[in-house]
Amino acid sequence: MGSIVARPSAWRKLQGIALCASGAEGLLLAALPVMAVSLTADPRSVSLVTAASQAPWVVLPLAVGVLIDRARKSSLLGVSLAVQAVAYLGLVAAVLMGAASLSVLMAAAFVLVAGQVVGEGTRGALVPWVVGPTGLDAANSRLLFIDVGVVRFLVPPLAGFLVVWNPVSVGWAALAASAVALSLSTRLRTPDAQPPVTRLRPVHEVKLGLRYLFGNRLLRSITVEVSAASFAWFMGYATLVLYVERVLHLDRWWYGVLLACMAVGFAAAAPFSGRIIAQLGYPVTMRAAIAGEVICKLLLGFVPAHWVSVGAVLAVHSFVTFLWNVGSQSSRQRFTPPELLGRVLTSHRALSWGVAPLGAAAGGLAAAAWGLDTVWVVAAAAQTVGIALVWRNLSARAFDEARLPSSSEGDHAKRP
Image: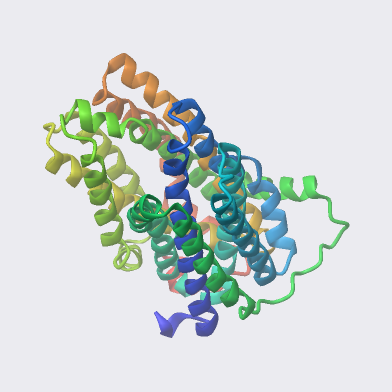
């Protein structure tokens, strides 16, 4: 990838920051619920820690987008990492003093993910400057694997071991990783932010980002489909552990085996996503990916209840989801003016992540009414509605019309 990276040194630093920051986040986000269970057996109280960790994704992204577009990005990235380091240090101190109450865990979760909202949005906005337009697909594939793969799949087993062995060790490990990321950010020098033409008005600035996101037919369609897919996925995922026990008739630890199958599909897609998109183009790849997601959900409702078949379907689902995510992120970066990129990225994330709790709740209701296997069929139907709304807008013509007037990205952009 080095031959197409505009700023190789900055790209190496950005990858290092993503790896260390995501590793630290993954450690603590996996450990906090386990620590909460050690304090209380009330599932409602334990769920408050998870709710606190999701709250920043609901309340912060729109305002964070304005910051990303108006501040120096390397400085903002450093601030987000410093805020997270404070959360890690505070948790370590609380555990050492025996003061790690449920409220402390909730506060740590909120501050940690608030930093994550800023950090992930800033890194996404930096990618076009670091790698250039021809390197977007490969760069997003690499960063997506780091940001999501590390947080969701690779680090949690280590966190589980550490929290059982010595709870404070999780905080120390996260703090060490965060310190490395913070050190790298101080050596990442990005251009000064362009001052706003008019006086800064936060609400107006947020509206500009939303207006562009919904005014662009292609980007609006991508956001609608991601929201539908997120809603549908969390319908099934929220009840997956019960699916393992009551449909597959397996012990609960097999839930981890199925998560590992998802990780295999995710990791398998990372090296090939850029080449697949380059070969097939954005419209074909992204349409095939969302169609594949629906087929996988239907199969989960109808395939024989055996962990091998279920694991294989989940692996394929992760594979095609990865392809969609790379194309989706690259499209927002490619077809958004630089001065609006932070707001468009975070607005999209707020809308798509905001429906996840609704999907989880709907999944629980559907499972109770129709059964744990049928919930996947209902999820497939829900996503199909989203696909039907946007299918025509994912055409080659739509991608061509979305190109910025000053775009000079060459054949790779003209033939998405």
